[in-house]
Every structure is written in structure tokens, then in C-alpha cells.
Image (cartoon, rainbow over the protein chains, first blue to last red):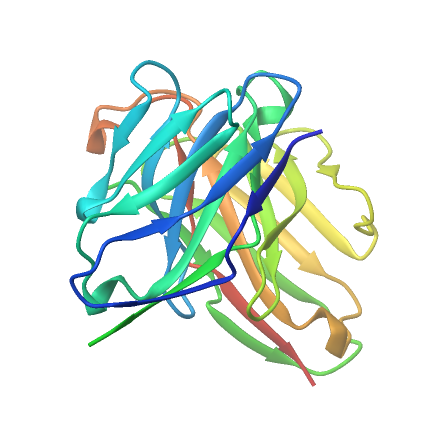
Length: 116
Length: 123
């Protein structure tokens, strides 16, 4: 079975400071990795994804993440956050599409709170 | 970009009634759709995988007679919460996986898109 652990439930940070949201995963088979952002009472927006290739993945809104296979991690980073980055962030893993339709399993979420 | 539409976005119903939530892929076909529920301040929990033309696959612990899923076409899946009770109040989110590439909006086969969610409140 696959599982995702987001190590921090809440991350407070000041505006323009760097931030890292941590994510570790567990799987006995190869998986794909994702980060999503959710604003209050809204659906999910894809920030970035790792399918294969370069382990450093760049996404939207200045976010990036690095896949580390040996540490089974996929931490999300941004060098300088804005107030508008305040939201809930979810790390997720999925199986390949041919395996159970490629269903997504989500971590518990990390609430990023950016303060002025 | 490609859109997945959920309807209704908000619904309030009385205890004991049934509520149907629709999930439509507007710009692409999706043989597979997923239904999630999310309680306040919590993560998304996968309820079931909806497959066009066949029975849904439910996750462990999800009552299939309580949460009826129908995926009758390549662009529509429905979730019906039967005999709803206050504990069923939640945010329900669907996602649709594109089953074929489409030139419109550059959708690639296999891409996953999420709806905006439906908030169910059972009184």
C-alpha cells in the first residue's frame, strides 16, 4: 500500500521569507508524486508533479520540489513567499494509470500561513 | 484550461433525504473518475474509483449502498448520498482522468483534473 506523510501540520512564516513544506512517502512500487494547493472552500490546484526524469521539478507560482528516492521525500520549496500563498498544501502519490486507474493518495495537508 | 464541473456547489438537505452530486468533464472524456470527501481541516479521503460502464471500486470502509456512484457516460459521474445524516456533512470533491488526448486546451491522456467541490450540509 502507498502512504504519504506531511511532517508539519502548520507552517507559519513571514512574507518574503523562504519556506519548505516536507513530504515523505512509502510505496513498494514506483509512484508519481504531486503537490496541490487548496484555498478555502475551493477545489485543488496542481502546483507541480514528478513523473520521471530530473529530480528537481519547477511548478507554478515560484514553487519547486525535489524528488529524493533514497530518502523517499518530495519536499516543496519557495525562496520568497507572499501573503497570497496562504493556503493548505497537499502532497500526493499516485500509482501508474494501469494500476487501479492511477488513484491519488493524499497526505494530511500542511497549512501555510504567511504573515506580513 | 480543461474543466471539471461539480454541481451543486452547495446543498443543504434534511436528514433522511438523498442527495445527488454531479461531476462533469467539460472539455475531455474520462473513463475514470475519483470521488473524495474532505472534513474540515482534514485531508482528502478517497471514497471510490468510478469507471465508465462498470461498477465503481470502493475503498475499504466506504459503504457502497450509502454512497451510490454511477458513471453512465464518458463525461459524467454522479455520487448519490442516500438517506443522508448529519455525519455525512462534508466537502465532496471529484477528479477526472482524461482518457484520450484532445487538441482543445492541450489535454494529454492520463492528466487528472479536479472539480471545485460540493459542500453538503445535512440538517
